[in-house]
Length: 69
Image 1: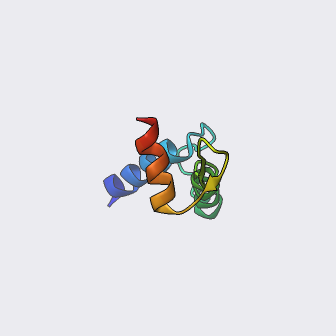
Image 2: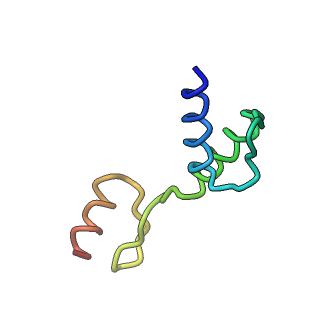
Image 3: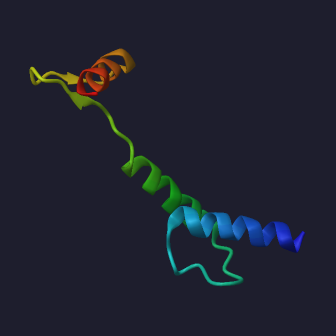
């Protein structure tokens, strides 16, 4: 059981990329909120095509990526 807790803490330490998690600190609500914020921050809402139109749907974004490559 202790090994599982150590693995979970290691996972979250990597996920939130923070050095403030110390051994024994179990403030999981804070850790989960930080991880969620980082995930949302990394999302891409859409892409702009060559004509300047903003595309947010999967097909439109896929077409832009195909044209780029």
